[in-house]
Image (cartoon, rainbow over all chains, first blue to last red; front, side, top):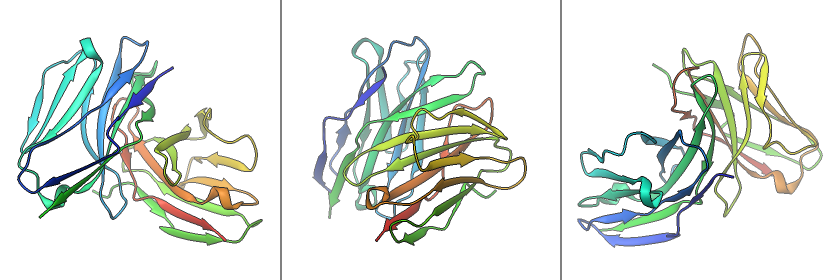
Amino acid sequence: AQKVTQAQTEISVVEKEDVTLDCVYETRDTTYYLFWYKQPPSGELVFLIRRNSFDEQNEISGRYSWNFQKSTSSFNFTITASQVVDSAVYFCALSETSTQGGSEKLVFGKGTKLTVNP
Amino acid sequence: NAGVMQNPRHLVRRRGQEARLRCSPMKGHSHVYWYRQLPEEGLKFMVYLQKENIIDESGMPKERFSAEFPKEGPSILRIQQVVRGDSAAYFCASSTPSADTQYFGPGTRLTVL
């Protein structure tokens, strides 16, 4: 069965600090996708990134970066120079690839609540 | 380019009433997914639908819950005879048949009194 573990329930940092959110996953599939979503206090879910299991290249987007390591089944997310607006709950998720090539159901971690204080 | 739309955003029902939650996928998307977020829990998959077909309903409670995605119109998640434990945020997501990313709507927050 698929499983996603986000061991950090809550993290609190001061503005401009760097922060890393951990995500460890379990799957028996060889082809899968990993995701990060952000849920700000307003409640919506915002897509941040998708990573294919065959692509282990790290990715950087502005202050956000992701480190995918298949050997440790981890897909960690780092925010550099955090800002108050980064305060949110961040979810890591895993999905199989359907036989039709599209997305199957997402299995979510329980989320990490990040608070960035001014 | 409108995103996934859900309505109502907030819904209050008394125990025993019916709740109907609507989801209009993004333009060009024909796959719809429903998830539930209970207080203090993460998001849990409920059902995956394509137009006029239920593909995977492994996360749906066996009783009182049903979902449809008709040829025309939005997808509907229906909860009959609601109980207090149904109070949660219900999220809809959509994707294209070949895309691997699910985009989420703003959610419907159901409160059962």
